[in-house]
Image (tube, rainbow over all chains, first blue to last red; front, side, top):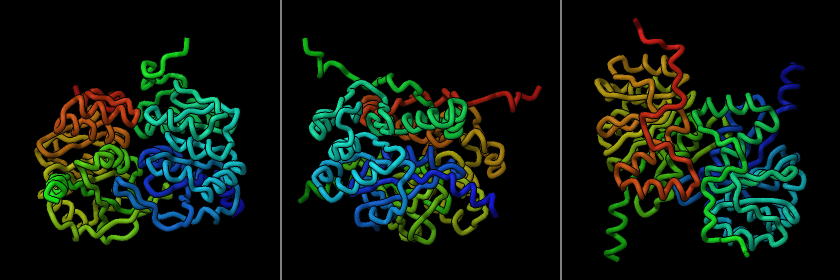
Amino acid sequence: MQYWLQIKLFRMHVAVLLFEDFETLDVFGPVEILGRLTDLYRIDFYSLHGGLSNNKHGVSVQTKKLADIDNAPGIFLIPGGYGTRVEVNNEVLIDCIRKIAEQSNYVFTVCTGTALLAKTGLLDGRKATSNKRAFDWVMTTGEKVNWIRQARWVVDGKYYTSSGVSAGMDMTLGFLNDIHGNVFAKEVASQIEFSWQQDKDHDEFYNPLPHPPSS
Amino acid sequence: MQYWLQIKLFRMHVAVLLFEDFETLDVFGPVEILGRLTDLYRIDFYSLHGGLSNNKHGVSVQTKKLADIDNAPGIFLIPGGYGTRVEVNNEVLIDCIRKIAEQSNYVFTVCTGTALLAKTGLLDGRKATSNKRAFDWVMTTGEKVNWIRQARWVVDGKYYTSSGVSAGMDMTLGFLNDIHGNVFAKEVASQIEFSWQQDKDHDEFYNPLPHPPSS
């Protein structure tokens, strides 16, 4: 009985934020990777009002109310998606995100999810990245952020921010690498037959042409 | 109005099968890729009894009843996951899968989802693949299938079967390549910043050592 309690106490709580029109893989890439480690991580889905969160891909996921998070999460995961264009102006949600992100051990953002976190001000003075195709818009949500355009993902303290959609998987494996070591992270990547791009600075989708360095 | 009707009529219906303890990315990798093409594909989730389908990753997805599929789907997607170990013995579900798969234009299986399709007999005499780590078990579900152990994905007629978990994304992009052309498929991969492994026969996770060719 004591052993059972010990195991449960050390499972890190992962709180996943959903909202209308979230990007499917931004959420379920990292959830696949952390969720399969059932001895180490416990995942719950939250939205501002609870209930079903839907997106344009036909996905409808059951969530709890964000206000009902009882303890500070180990990881707070903020996905992107077209819904972020609406939610950056949702002051109630942004206030909730700020409060939970402050209390969390780690905060992950994928794709345009970085815009929601940037809007809280918590990334001011920090390095962060986001989706390639929405980068200019995302930059407007946090003018004091040190935006890194060329990166698969960026780590600054407890904040892990990734490039677009699929990059969230590379980042999550990068987190496992940082916490549990390289052998462990590679084993998880192999279990899901995922070709992990291990170098967070290697960004094959970066295209410098539309944004030449100022001379 | 007529234009709107025309667009709707030509959207291909993608029916995604869920069951208790499905593998998260087996489902949501392909759903990300097809779901974002909202002018071309329309996705619905089904389970035997409808309602919420759950898995050990904490995911809980709203589904319709499998019996309520009104028309033959364009694509019927069957994911894997530990739940397949139970569901291969669920004769009611296997009968439903057989009926829907027969009527569908295309059938996709990801990972151990191939076991559920193999169990119907529809893969007898056809080439198919599955998850590396469960391959020996999957083979027992269809002894007349021509199992291809080394493949990222396999196409035999209307049946697309993939290796483990992440391979479902490469396969779905491969399908887009087959239907809409290479430029189109590469553009979708780029939109989601996914490093698409385009060669279905290139399988970096194949390890011949545990299975030496018989001499």
